[in-house]
Image 1 (spheres, rainbow, N blue to C red):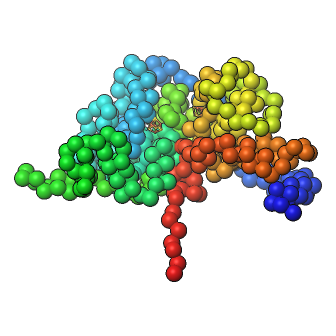
Image 2 (image 1 turned 90 degrees about the vertical axis):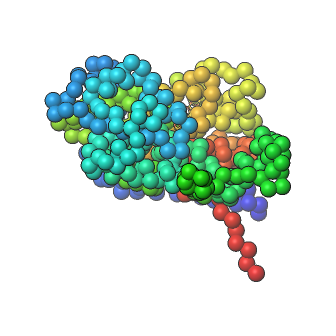
Length: 408
Ligand code: SF4
Ligand code: SF4
Ligand code: SF4
């Protein structure tokens, strides 16, 4: 019996047993679910309707009576998009200044590390930190901000899940990366050759003794980390970058706390997401068709109304938490999962893989569908690891590639 036949048989047995097991599981889960529901307090993540999108102009009523709060914004291993998303508040960013002293914001303000070091512990009300942690400077700064802050918000997908920087965990580590970037890419290879360094390429060093003194660069880590793998985090705002509405939800919570003494959201809350998956807010019509051919959007005339998956385009919507208003699928691009998994799932990539695999006609009684045919369909997924873990590898159980030790 082939693996394919064994799999079909096992699945059939499981299906017969499933209803009973499911009923048992539901009964056991009911008290825990009720407790979770009861614990939910007014917060965007757990109850998005409680904090509707607010106009920042009406939200921020001038300076708080006890004086302005301190706000820090920091980027670690980031592309700058998260900072730009905060600037997307446009002129409202000035009204944030009514409420807060911006004590650090490398992209827009002049606060320095020494200024933060001089502040008393917990004197920064909120630190918004975007980007993953990939070097010694990132780690030092996020630990310093944690020490000085009352609340730390993990802002954006790179900080929450590792994001695209964590795909570097699929390399052999920092030496592999530096070697590739400084000697193998066409521009750097040509540069090394043109400058006569082809035999002994010039690569960055962490310490250099110049006549004026010792110059240092941060040390790159072999493994990129999420923010909560390095420091304690209070809230999460996922998205690459997060929607501007998420910022107003967070600010609403902070404003309610600072001006009106309303309790803050519970620690660990995810702000700006829904309880359900992205498909739930995607306006496309789903027929849950079987997939036999996988295509990219540019290869077909994409139907503007039908589910992309029904058209053969792989979409991570079934495994991704809602909250972005389906901003990619609305314009005909599949979801790549930047908001991360739903609350019930830890492993985003395998959840997406399982959702997509269920659309392959593996279990149908189709005589033309044999093991080879299924493998042929699945082989059309180019770069499965990069596709299913594009944003969440840093937080996944896989986390990074490892070298197999050779035993004698
Ligand atoms: S989450 Fe996206 S926008 Fe934000 S820093 Fe990372 S890559 Fe850039
Ligand atoms: S296009 Fe994607 S998000 Fe929309 S319904 Fe289909 S699978 Fe779900
Ligand atoms: S549709 Fe998917 S990839 Fe696009 S913004 Fe939303 S969660 Fe991110």
